[in-house]
Every structure is written in C-alpha cells, then in structure tokens.
Amino acid sequence: MQWRVNIPPLTRVFLALLIAFSVSYQALRYGLDYTAGHYLALIPQWALFTPWVYFTATYSEQNIVTILIAGATIFYGGKYLERAWGSREFGKFILLVTLLPNFVASLIYVFLFAISQNDSLALVVIQGSIALQGAFLVAFKQLVPEHTVTILKGAVKIRVKHFPSVFLVANTLSGIILGTHTALVLAWVGFMTSWTYLRFYKRQPDLSAAGTGGNQLRGDASETFAFASFWPDATQPPIAAIADAVYNALVAIRICTPFTAEDVELGNEQATARGEGGLPNLLNNGQSKADRNKLEDAERRRALALRALDQRLHAASTNNKQQSSTPGSAVLSATVNPATSLVEAPAEAQP
Image (tube, rainbow, N blue to C red):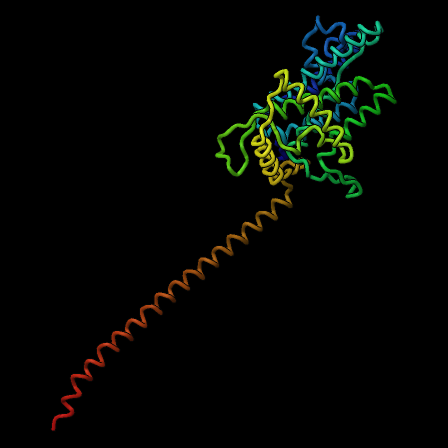
C-alpha cells in the first residue's frame, strides 16, 4: 500500500520555503561569505536595502535543530489551522505573523541603537520561527483552550491554554540568562501580533446555536480569550486591570472598537462551540490503520443491527395487520348470527 502524507496546500508551500531558505542561508554563509547571510536574514542596518528579508528571515534557520522545530511548527500547526480556517484565512494569518514581528523587532533594535549608540544593536541578526511559534500557540489557545496534551506517557499533562505563557516565560528567561534577546523580542511581538489580530480583527463564521451558518463575526470577544486569561489565575486580576486601562485608552483614541455585552455573550457561545469540536489527532494523518479497522467494524455492526431492526419492524407490522383483520371477521359473524337467530326464533315458537 502506498504511504501518503496528507498536507494542506499552503502548509506544503511554507514547508518548502523553510527548507529552501534555510539551505540557501547556510550556502550563502559558508559557501560565499560569512556576512552574505544578510540577503536572507534580517539585519536592521541593512534591511532597507534588502526589504524581502522581512519575510525570508522567519524561514532562514541557523542549524538543523531549529529547522526541525520550525518544520514541526509549520507541519502540525499549519495542518490544523489551515483546515480549521481555510487556506485563505490561514494565508493572511501566517503572512501577518511573519512580516509584522520582524518589522517591529527591527524598529526596536534601531531605537535601542539610537539611544545607546551601540553598533552591535544595529547589526544584530534577526531570524528564525520564534514569532511564528508564539503566534500558532495563541491560535491554539483560542480554538481548543481546554484540550490537554500528555507528554512522557502521562507523566506531564498540560492544557493548551497554558502553552503561550510557558513559551513566553521560557524565552524571556533565556533572553535574560543566556543572552538570546532576539528570541525574547520575537516571542513577545509574535504573541502580541497574533492575539491582537485574532481578538479584534479576524473574521470567523458564526458557530453559535443562533447562527445561520452564513454570518461572519469580527474578532473574538470571549472571556476565555481575554489577555489576562493567558496567565495563572493568581496573577489575572492585576494583569486584567492593566490590560483594561490600555484597552480603554485605545478605545478613547479610536484605535480599537469597544465590545458590547452582546459581543461578549456571542463570543462566549463561539468559544463553547469550538470547545465541543475538540482537537483532532495531529500526530497521525487522519487515523491509523487500526483505528480505521475499528471504525469499519463498527460500521458493519451498525449496518447489521439496522437490518435486523428493520426485519423486526416489518414482522411486527405484518402481525399487526393479521391481528387487525381477525377481530373484524369475528365482529361480522357476531352481527349476522344474532340476526339469524332472531328470525328463526319465532318460527320455532309456532306449533
């Protein structure tokens, strides 16, 4: 039997871009000149002369480990999100979380260079899929927040809604302790880009019970996708207070449109509907052979049970018809015989 990997088309394209750009980046660095990597990686000082790097930098990984991590991110994340949203919406999302974080990160380093006059900040190399990883985790937090991921045969269990905060904390500590500050910046900017777009701008179908199927909702006003919901329960009240203050300020200057009570209620219904859908198996292409055999056996048993039930119903219907015809004949005989006896009775009384 031919083994086939079922990958959505756009996910396939970005996997191919990851391989092509990563291999090309290594070829430029070690084949031509060590500094030639700036043709694919983002270096703030030179980015104005090579503007395409705002896109290529995300898919130009430095080593085999980061290539494998990026490949797994695009393969599993893209496979699910493209099927959940469709290729068009997924394409808009992945372009946004590719271009905008790189652009904002380069502005941050240019600003830091302007303040400190430290040349190394202007020549820092910004590359890798860190922003993409953070963005995908935010999307999973929106779609299946209560799904539990089991690691090491059940030794570690963690809900999907906790992944973004763990990811941010890990990259923040790594940036402070190990000096991977570009990963720190990209993680936070990718997270904020993804959350802002999904919270306020992305259009999605109405999944609520009252929806007709053709309605399009803008953003996600649900309480389960509020900024404070990404953090542990104990820290949510102060974070919510700060987030609300920023949100109110953005509403006041008309950058954000305020959510109504109806928007929040509808968003909560949407979140409930998404949660009932669950998370499909991403590690296998659909189902394994054993799972398919089980489903086929179940379908066969169901067909046999339906056939047997149909036969019983048919037999019961036939018996009911026979029983309904028998009382009719008895009643008919009962109505004729008394009449006959009434006619014959006077004849017997005559001498």
